[in-house]
Length: 426
Image (tube, rainbow, N blue to C red):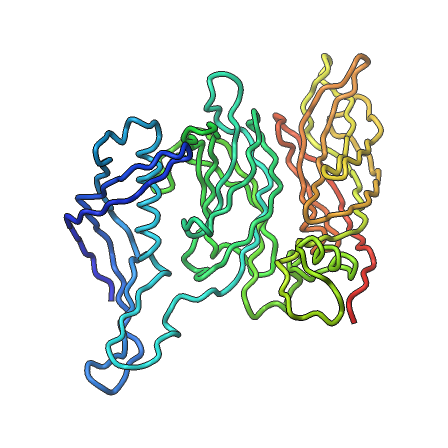
């Protein structure tokens, strides 16, 4: 049963807020008003009166939440950005505590109703790759962007990336893991901010993706457009895009596909010993008393990249042609290779293959840049940035990539992964 309900109350709630500067502020929350559609579930059905053993209730659709904030003995607007930060934290906490799939279970008849409570159904692996064309929030210089990624807005379940200073096209290449409770209704949220040091960060833009769009066990590579507000879809301003790589792993399907992020995947005995040692755990074959922390996965191998061709490259020469060549860089290993120069062509063909020894496949990335060769230098024509997750999972693939930072152009690549032989524990 779903009911539209409205609740208006006048409670007096006092919160003790501590800022990054160490200032403690008593903040009063009052004049709370709430409107939304609540879902009531009567389950399990039984033969006894009233016919069901328990009621589960949850907010299926939020319509409006209003409240007033006031600093006791002061003005909350005296500290820039503080009001918005506190209001956002309270709003997220209130909404998450009752919004579907979170539900409250009220027992009507005696019994065990633990099966009605919210339970994890899988793990979402998220690689925050990069962003491009971000809106500049600084008057002098460029924004210092970082991202906050989450499914539920709980402090211990929200992940924050590192800050990339003075860059509107940041490359993060960071991996996060999230618990999923209901893949059919939950969303992944990404918010990109401009760091302002000790002051409140300024939102550049946000984006969301429905988890229902993900195919279990298959990596999804997406670019999400950033908007000002997720609930107001009338924002036509270009705030930039964020690049994600996603893999949803439902519980119970571990044997159906390979999850390269799993702690024991492609990890040698030596790596396990080293990881245990760094966690302060004595490692020997007979030790079972200590439970190590989750290990960081290291996957080694050889990445073979064939630069096949390019199409529709922008003209950079005076006569409407270009002399393109390609530079390939393995970012973490800092290994570089480059193709030969093809003169006077906007659709060059190279068919050159380069091999890279990869020491950490899941945390490295390939940057492929196209340049125009000139007698007195070179001109940048565009790039594409690739993580190695897909080639590690699939072993080999061919793809046509659009060039970022270019008016036009595509790059045809053939990638192949040859894993290093590993030795597993007996």
